[in-house]
Image 1 (cartoon, rainbow over the protein chains, first blue to last red):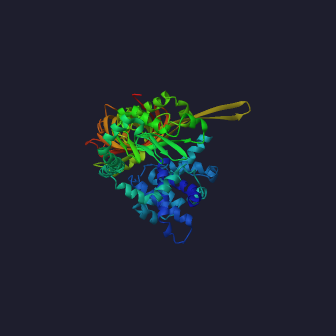
Image 2 (image 1 turned 45 degrees about the vertical axis):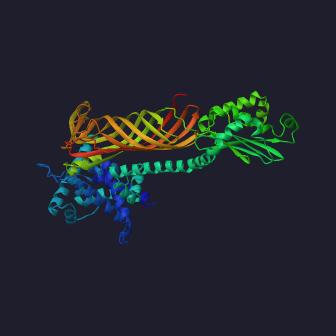
Image 3 (image 1 turned 180 degrees about the vertical axis):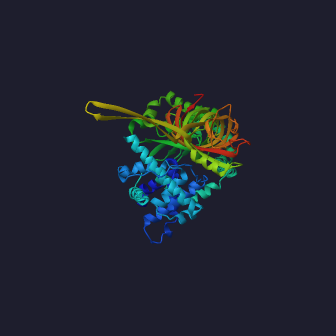
Length: 159
Length: 472
């Protein structure tokens, strides 16, 4: 069944964008209703999973937009991106990464998800979120930096 | 490490990540998908629509009642009128002449309609039909016995004409309850008033017994032993005790709130199963119609979940290291660091909306005493209602709300409409178990004019209870 086949992966997508489980569930519900509603419009161009994923991501963005999405410029004075060795995060599992992403501020999180995980360009993201491409770029840089800081913190705690 | 490596690591790890899907999510998606046309129809039903529906149901019930009455009464009346003019004198005649009036002739027939006895004689057999009237339906429940002339003992005790004579005597004894008697010579018909039936019936049995025919009766006549099973009009008051699990459907319309507030309110509130309990007095108005009123308590439950932002979590980390500077020179170093995380916590509060109400319904009930079905409709008057728990204020912060401090919820939500279908099963002589799925539609908002939104609750449930017959 279509839902059973893709629900797990799409739930993961929803959780990456939502602020909590309830919100993720709402996005998932709305997204799959749209999937069934527009199923007949699928043109068999590209993967079916990719088509569903796009609908879910768009639903998530529309959902978050209702709450007045804010792309805050968090002041991180003097804090350069820490130098991080690959072995520092190689041990991190999927759940750890999900937690780290969810701890990001909303704007950072969305841009990071769209660019890094979903593979949208900054221009595409700018169009989707009605922001400047530059804003998308800076949000990504800061998101990356914050993630690296968090990974370092985790390392310290683990020591 | 380059940014690309970092990004690739995240991408590869999370590309195929799956998360557990909440139980029941498919059920939420599927109905949305399938119920769309139905929802469109239901959205159009408002309070006026329900009122019209209730009136239509009421009209149908009254129509049915009228039709049944007109279908059953005229036949009897016609027969009665037809015979009335000629029978009063014959009644006197037949009562004074006793056996002579009802002397049987071959193929003589005595029919007592609406009451009890029908005798059909033919040369071979005597049939006596003892019929105990069913007062509600004006139909007769007939128990047959036959006097087979081939049985010697009965023949000896009761010659051919005996049953007819006996019935005649019985009839005389029961005459105080007779309104009409039509005795046609070829087809004698006796009409009894159903009201006098129960006393007549007792007298008939006594009379039969007094004349030494009780053995005969016991061996041959099956007399309906109790009133159970008939659906006669029982004017006794009834008392119902019931409890019901129920579910509330919330409807919110915007007045002056922002869309963001309504979205947040909608996502933070989730209706849960509530309950109602109460009692009702039941007064039968006629054979089918019942009037019910009582008092009931209802509680609607709601789960209110909200995020408490800027929760500060402080973790103290103590790291101990041992530094060996030279053999025998070991230093233990302890580093203490504090990690502060700013996040949010999710809190869940259970809100309750409670109300005390007086229902007033009219029911149409049909079936028999063992199993009957009722259609009920009416109004429900709110006596008092109050909301307790927490709600979001317009700044999206949770604020407590109680019976005394509620500024946006009314203390009386006024009138509601009530409709239900009840199924009653008798469990003993005086008690019936009933199941009653019901729907309650509140006509007024539960919020007052100061509220930035209007909110209503509709309630559906299944009342399960006992109905006790009083005055028995």
